[in-house]
Amino acid sequence: MRILKYALLGLIEKEEITGYDISNQFKREIGEFWSAKHSQIYPELKKLTAEGLIEYRTLITGTKLEKKVYCITQKGKQELLNWLTQPKPLPETEKDEFMLMMYFSAAISMEERKRLLQDQITKRNAKLEMLLSNQHLLELANDNIKSPDSWQFGHYLVLSRAINREQSYVKWLEDTLQLLV
Ligand code: FER
Image 1: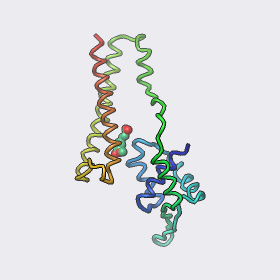
Image 2: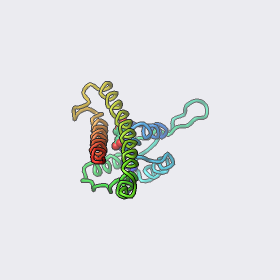
Image 3: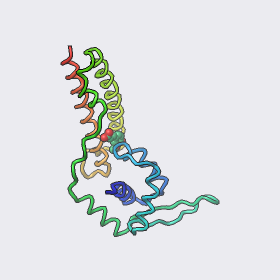
Image 4: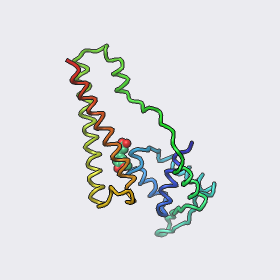
């Protein structure tokens, strides 16, 4: 399944947007939880155009620069709505190298295990700090972010889920550290 297709339709549906800005949006927000290579985005835009799901007009900026500004078609809106309203399968469990190491960790000393757990706690806490600061910025920029009617509500949801996940991971790491003597 081409999931990137729906990420692009979702972005273009919000407002007409250049390929360059789509790429930036990906880096800034969606890419935090749905990674896409810069090199995948342009071919996908081409496909969507060929399929009649999006259209573009050419914007001349300056003397030579031409930009494509994309907007969604009726057909594109319909496909996006179909996808949005369809139940989703569970993803495969995320591969976590630390978990694989933990699985075999009876082979190493308690001291080594504790050191490695402590290292993960430090790294997870740093990630958590980043997420909490993003959440704080989002709350500052949108006074009604927790309202399901807010246009940024979806962003808030994805972020709060990530915070929840990291907090629970850190708690598990700390509980595990306590088990080791
Ligand atoms: C964001 C920053 C981080 C964001 C999501 C994340 C949607 C992370 C998500 C994750 O790790 O699952 O602004 O916005």
